[in-house]
Figure (cartoon, rainbow, N blue to C red):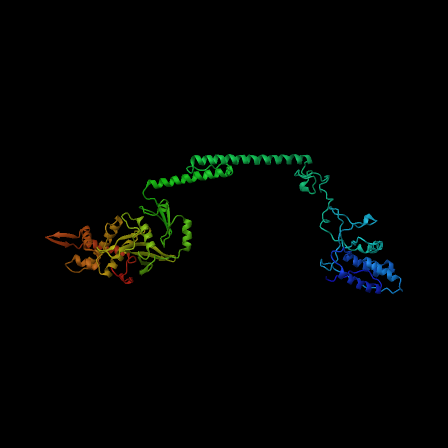
Length: 571
C-alpha cells in the first residue's frame, strides 16, 4: 500500500510530534480501504490563513487544547500531559496540494457547516448547495470532538479579517443573476413576446416594449399555432390530391403527355416555365419552316473572319444540317454548332496550316500536298465544305485514292485557305484535276487561274498531258476556257514559224489536244479550207491579251522555279 502524505497541522511539542509521525505512518500502512476512514480536508487558503494567524498573534495552547486529527492522537496527547513538561517545539506548516491521487485524503459524505451567525454564511446555489471557496474549511469526521469544533471556530474568527483583501473566486452558477429584470421602465418582467414563457429579461422579449399585453401575446401565439397546423394539414391534403391525380394521369396517358406540373413549384416559377416553353416552340417552328422551304438547310457558315452564304446542299450530319448557321475552324476545317464552341476550339487548336508537305512557296502564297489516306478527316471536311459551293460534286468520304493540293495565303495568324484541287493518284484517263474550288471570298482575284496553272505545271513535271475531269461546273468551265485562251495566245505570240501543229502545242503546254481545238473554235481561229485545217493568227486578240497582261502584272502567276516536288511513286 503506498505511503500516505502527511497533511500539515498546527505546531505542537517536539516529543508529541515525533511520536505522532511514527504512529501515523504505522497506522497508514496497516489500515485497509474497507475500514471507515477518518479524514480531514483543509483547503490551501485555510492552511495559509492558519499559518499567518500563528505568526501574527501566537497563542499559548496547552497540550489539552491541541487540535487532534484522530482518536489515537488525542489519547497519546492526554497521556503525555501527565509526564514532565516539555518545551513545545514549533514546526512550520506544510501545504499539501491535492491532485486526486492515492496520496490525497478523501472525505466521505458531506457535512453542512453550522455557524451561529447566519449572515456570514455564503449564498446558496439554486440547487440548495452551499458555495465552496478557498476560504472554506470542511472537516468531515463522524466522531469529531468538541475541541475540534472549538479550534475551527477560533481559526475562522482569527482569519476573518485577513479575507477582506482577497476576492472570491466566482463559480459558473454565481455568474448568472437570478434577480435579473427587464430593462424597460415600468415592466415587471412578466410574460413573453412569444407567448410561451412566463418571464422575460430582455427588450426583445418584452411585451410592453412592443406595445402589447401578456394576454395579447398568448392569444397571438395560439392563433399562430393554429395557422401552422391548418397550413400543414392543407399542404398534406394537396400533396395527397396531387399524387392521386398524377397517378391517374400516368395510368391514362403514360409517357404520351407532359406530367402534371401544378403544386410542384410556385405559380411564378411555373408561369416563367410556360413562357420559356412557348418561346422555344416558336423558334423551333421558324427553324423547321426554313428547312422545309429549301433543300439547302445550312444557310451560312462562319469561316475565319468571314461569314459566307452557301450555294448548294452538303451532306453534313443531320444534327448539324438542321442548323441555320455552321461554325468552322479555318485551319483544321472542323465544324461546330455555336460560336462559343468555336472560340473554345480556337483557343486549343494547334493547327496553323494544312497538314501535309509544302511543295510551293512564292511570297505569301503556298501550296500543300495532302494525302487523303494519311489525313482522312481533314480531306473529308474539305470535301464537305466544297460541296456547299459546287453543284456536281459527288465525292465526300472516299478520299483515300486522291491527293489534295491546298493553296493558302499566309499572314501573322497562319495560312488561310484560298482554294484547292484534287487529283487521282492513278488516273486511267490522265485527269490532272478531279475537283477544283476557289473560296468565295477569294474569287475574281486570279487565284482560280493560279490553281489551274499549278495543276498543268505538275503535269509538265510528270511529262504528261492533262485535262480536268468532266463534267465541269459552270464557273469551272468559264475558268478553264479563260486559262486555255491565255495559254494559246501566249504561245501564238511567241511562235515565229509558218506552220503550226496542235500536237506541238499540246506537248509544249501539257494541254489536251481536244481542249486546244475546242478553244480555237470558240475564238474563231480554226478554219477548214481546201480540205485542210488552218489556224488563223488573230493579231487583235493577241494585242488585247497583251494589254490585259500588262495591266494585271505578274503578282498572281505561278513561278515554276518555286516548285519543290517529286511525282509520287505509282503515278
